[in-house]
Length: 216
Image (cartoon, rainbow, N blue to C red; front, side):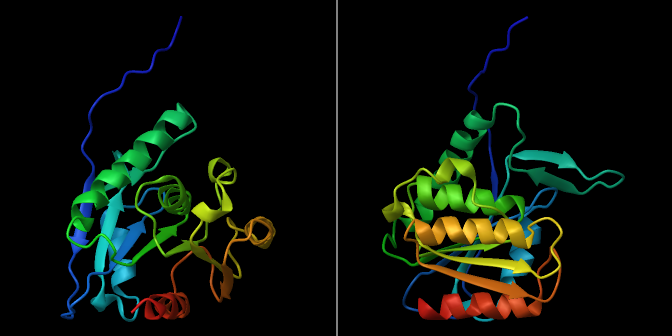
């Protein structure tokens, strides 16, 4: 038996909520959801960040969709371990194409990427290996993936690592390892621990607000 990899076209789903406060400048707040979530999930969280009304929110849904067990809700995953390298490349191209048309009329617009859980790896990959470079990556409850660790330091934007104090998945040990790597790589880094587990909280959203405010 032999396995072959076939390239094919596939359509992704991206939700865009324009800024609700009039402004002379475009700003893009781009979200990547976690495993078994959807574009609606990350959009709803980013909308709750204070000051997000001044930003165009772009919620990118992972390409691999499936039904939630026992429900009709459609959810998605960024990738599995199978054909991982091809999936990474496909996902980066997907995000490049999703953002490209939005940036045609505002090529210098500030961009912030925000990932949650499995979406953190995608936020890092799109930011560091993709075409459109954000000013910040907000990484909530997820690791720095190994494939971006080999990228030159000048490819990294400023990064906010955030994690709940009782997060059982993104543990203190994982956070400390990521922080040590990024700091040693010369990356501008901030770390925020908040009360909570593997989840979004009001405290976290207020901390993200501080990042957005610096770019106004």
